[in-house]
Length: 291
Ligand code: ARG
Image (tube, rainbow, N blue to C red; front, top):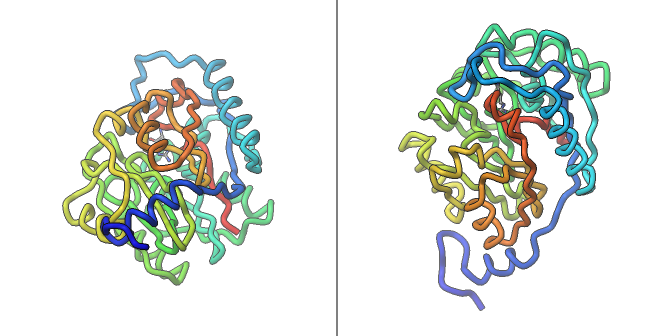
């Protein structure tokens, strides 16, 4: 029996889904923050005057990796290159899909060297060939596959022209979303993919990070999506890694954790306070291999 309708899905269906969230094993690529520091400022979170505790950054990152492995995920490590402090944010290294691997081109010269470091490693390790993009795109930071859609952010880093290039290279449509708040400069700082299952894709997002047209697109694609408050986004709470059941997120995102529990997800807090000084959270640290 169908319950009252909430958007496209009935409350009964939502209740059922809530009761049986299922985890999918993930294959993730990461990069150890061996050379991590804040030596330049390319987003509002970065402040060269604020000291970074390098040993703590490493320890927190090791805890993230251990947590992901404890949850049953496969985590492979891409070697870090000296002089590329932001390489720890491996999400920006590529977009790996069953239809092909797209490399990156960074908006800022400070990160430019990472593009070839990731592409070369990916090709040497069986994830190639890597398409070297002409337009600026920062990989999974701005490009998030969910349930057959490819959501793509633009406005700060990845360009609108890059969405067209991606669509051409991968042979699939891209859903462009415009980011408008400099604190949320990558799509993965404004939106979490909670469930990638094509039968019932699920996302959460902070509406204030998007322009009105993009909010309308999101509302249409995901009428039942969880929307979060500014406080959640302002601690980079949206930058979370979900396997469809467990969601690795910042311990500061207390309200978000409550919302997720209410939706049948299990929040798993991991503190990355040092990497937050570079403007990243758990999701920034992982690049998903989609086979
Ligand atoms: N300091 C890095 C930058 O500004 C942080 C990147 C965070 N990565 C992400 N996927 N949001 O580019």
